[in-house]
Length: 356
Image (cartoon, rainbow, N blue to C red):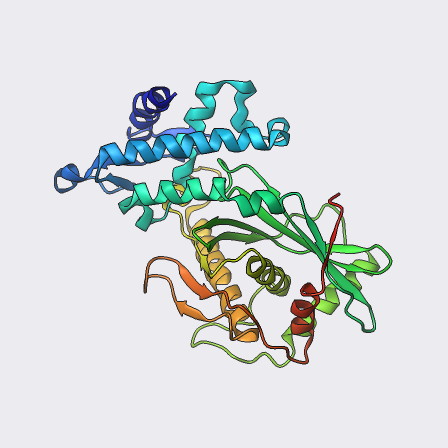
């Protein structure tokens, strides 16, 4: 198996990825080069991402171990087989090719310089026992009294770890006591060495208009905007999706529960972005604008979380320590008399319910 993985990567993935034409996947162009550290000084074409392999033997080992973990992950969650293109009707060679190619879509520029550490981290995401254990659980918080009594529900789910940014996703909802619910944004994450890496916060597309009951639940969320005035020179932390703040609040309590010590927000993935920029269906300038706004909003969401919960302290911004935003996950958070703290406090009186 080890040699099969290496043969597919070096004889199928690498030649195509590093060619001038790149690889087209579902209409998107993947174009990157893998070069040995000794070749860096001789390399002149930086028109597309360059992944630097400093120790080929260690790189090969990390690649093999990551790929085996990916295959094992799919065995653990067979439900992905019915919805996930990576299975390719059970063809092992195509599964290996997809695994060894698509992982680089989730690499940052820093990861290009440290691909061995990157692969080891991605392997940890797939192997994390706490996430596997939580997959079988679902939580319901205590009821928050008010004009519209409500509670929150949340659980860990899996999604395609080859095509999506992460193997695990945190799903949550706000619910009334009549059985109505409103989905909050999903959080894509992975755990490695008690560090929680967050790659995406996004809303699912709604197929139908909100009902009157859901609109009432949605209005409850805007209580968090009351008296929020703190802003930076060019942007306001109020300029976020307020529902993302609640997702992050519930998620902070969850990762406290499973023993994480820090949150690291990651974004800006050059190969993924380059693929979209080279897609003729996407306008170049429009995509650049969307990408910049999306990244800024992503980081603002964490600044907003820290604003309400100062114990979740931002200890470094992107490109200070590395290319992620680092936040402390505290052991405890002090109570305050506002709705967002009531939401956090309600998680500490949660109960486990049957996963639907």
